[in-house]
Image (cartoon, rainbow, N blue to C red; front, top):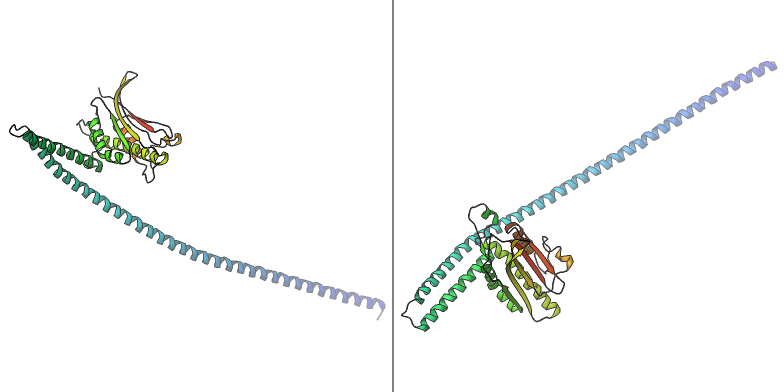
Length: 331
């Protein structure tokens, strides 16, 4: 073989080897691509499985939360229904008690009125001795006091109470004797005041009639005087004073050509701070231990809506307080 032929054979051999080498590289590359695709598919399947497991877990957790929420709703609904049932039962009891109280007070007051009437007739009999007449007068006074006491208790319990809105719907003009209501309050709270060393004074020179149902006026004065006594009691406990005074005053005044009735309740108790004065008529606000926070709110409502009046506070901490109600006088 000639050198040229040998060289040609060598070149052809090298070309064949190169082709084989390229084919081998292609096979390896294809293999790597296939492996990569398989890895990607495996990772995707794994992610899908993880997501599916998480979804199943979330669904189970959601079902559990839903069941728990339904149970809580059912429990709270049952508790609410039970509470409402109990409240309705209490309201029914109170309604029945109110009806019973009406009959009870009627049955008690009627005989007392009869006793007083017959005793007054006996007092005019000239045939009785002075001693007998004195005994009859004692019976009359006792029956009147008992009648007044029963009336005070009746109004305190709210028996036969009538709202001002119902009164306005009728053509009947309802008025209350201010002096009479103050006397009733004295009967109710007098013993309480005496027991804690608090005096009650009343200053009213003339008879004053107000366009309001007596029960509503009674509620207004009762709240103010009761609060005044409590303020004196707290002051007695903190400052060790021995005497306190609650003063109830009712006068007619002329201000800027307008005739006004001024009703005031003042005390020498612990007083009210400036910060609390702005909050005294807010619902549920109270400075008393165990207080409900509705008494003064009710007072303000009665003054403004029933009497079309205004109420103001003047007080200084440690120096008592004064509540002043101004009402336009009837012509």
